[in-house]
Length: 569
Ligand SMILES: *[C@@H]1O[C@H](CO)[C@@H](O)[C@H](O)[C@H]1NC(C)=O
Ligand SMILES: *[C@@H]1O[C@H](CO)[C@@H](O)[C@H](O)[C@H]1NC(C)=O
Ligand SMILES: *[C@@H]1O[C@H](CO)[C@@H](O)[C@H](O)[C@H]1NC(C)=O
Ligand SMILES: *[C@@H]1O[C@H](CO)[C@@H](O)[C@H](O)[C@H]1NC(C)=O
Ligand SMILES: *[C@@H]1O[C@H](CO)[C@@H](O)[C@H](O)[C@H]1NC(C)=O
Image (cartoon, rainbow, N blue to C red):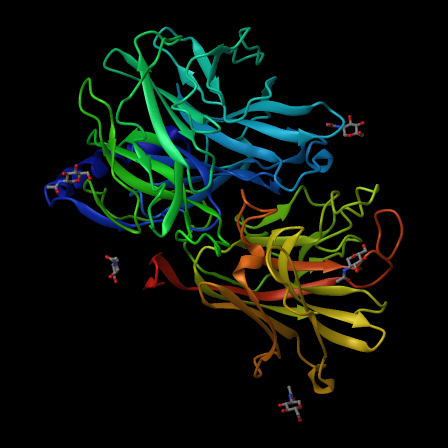
């Protein structure tokens, strides 16, 4: 599917939309990209909206979602989906929250572009800017290798002026021109606007409108003080005039359920009406339980000629401009972001496109077989040894973990495990995973005392006690089914059963364990892992201990849109 074919659908959609517009304003719910979808940037190409989000060290990275109605969003592709696009970078990235920071998604002359700053590369001087492009955003393979550029500043924007000059604005806010072929930036960078005084002026986007260049930014840091502010100038290099009505969007100082609102982008629909996205955290002012981290929200905006834009405040229940007619007629084979998972897994099925790893996986770790998804254990367990000099033991050379985002406040997740460990320490299980230092696990592990179910956690706040229960002797015939359920917004319940027998509860944990701290930029994944807990040599575990997972089911139950207010899935 190429942009040209998208254009063919345009006339029909336009007709439908005009009819719909007369029906009056719409209602919708936030977040539109539920679960960890931080730092959104969006653009419309004809009748299709595209949004990209940040992914740090998760791989594949920089997902791009597509929608024709602003409500149903389908994973179109991952911009960074091949190790060969940035050879060696992933395994050289030490920090849990380094990697791909906030991107800007823009369309120019038949091509979609994603520009981003990659942070924390050990052994190669730190940070690097990357620009990927494609003519077919529904195909991973069509994304280019990146043009790279050198800056230490995060959050690059990409702006084409009418004369063809291309500008990159970064944190600061600094402005440079860029040669799109070579990645060369003009020197020195020019500071065009420091923001209104909040910490971390960042996430800039430049828009040209009615004879002004507008620079929209995030400031105040990405937590409770986060806000969107704006300035304008008739000359792109400044001086910029700060809007006296700043901030134009924030939930700072409120007791709203949606906190941290900031880092936004603006675009128009086919009617010329303005819309925006931003990141927000469903947490409330007490700011304790927010396992899904920063999610993407939508709001309507007004931007009258010669005036400053007016953005609608972010809530769970929203009203705004008439939405395009609801449709799931979006190209591609990715999942719609709020859909459930129900996979049997066999040799014919690919690893679902929305599944992610923690850094680039080791070759040969994950394979689809007729028995299910086979995971070869990693020597590093989910935590690894942070202080080890050996990157393998730090879990930096590919953890044997694969997951999907927790997208709903309340959900049920279960997977069947076939596992016959032969050496003490071999383990396989499922987890709510935020970072290597914040996760909640239920595993089947061979201990000196025999085959056991083990519940353990790492992370923020008080630790619930580790729990070990022998696997009942009469469970041997069937796969062991492992379960994680969020029955309320603040905790998880982990249990195990013999096939569809009655589950035994193995542990419960507060969702605070996987909220913020070492994972303040990321959000929780649920998924499966296998490890030998440090045994073996070099990169290899002792023989055996390969785990097979089948019947992977993630069932959304309810979404909270306000304190105590939920919408059933
Ligand atoms: C990765 O790190 C190694 C060891 O420090 C270094 O030799 C190599 O150049 C690095 N590669 C990249 C792509 O950063
Ligand atoms: C939000 O909408 C939901 C369902 O659409 C409704 O049940 C709930 O009462 C609304 N909440 C508020 C605060 O308006
Ligand atoms: C429709 O929504 C827009 C954007 O929120 C708002 O500016 C406008 O006043 C609304 N119109 C009506 C009739 O409510
Ligand atoms: C295993 O034995 C226990 C205790 O006798 C019984 O309650 C349970 O139903 C049995 N489970 C299976 C899978 O046979
Ligand atoms: C994780 O692995 C390290 C060794 O690599 C080990 O010290 C630690 O005990 C392991 N954790 C568990 C729960 O087995």
